[in-house]
Length: 71
Image (cartoon, rainbow, N blue to C red; front, side, top):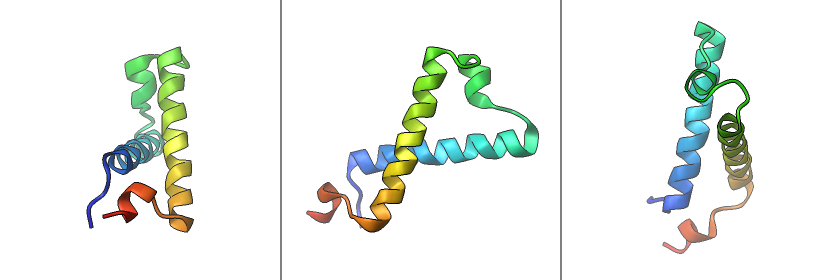
């Protein structure tokens, strides 16, 4: 079953966020902070996008994406 481009981006962002948290936990390495700086505007945007992506993925358990369900 194919996914729309928006769903692919959301899944990718949530996956990257999960990988970053895994690196923080196991290696004490935060890639977002290392690349973008500690709580800079850019890092806040990345954290915000990852958070919104996670929320959308949780909501997708209850309600399917209208774009993906058309196919």
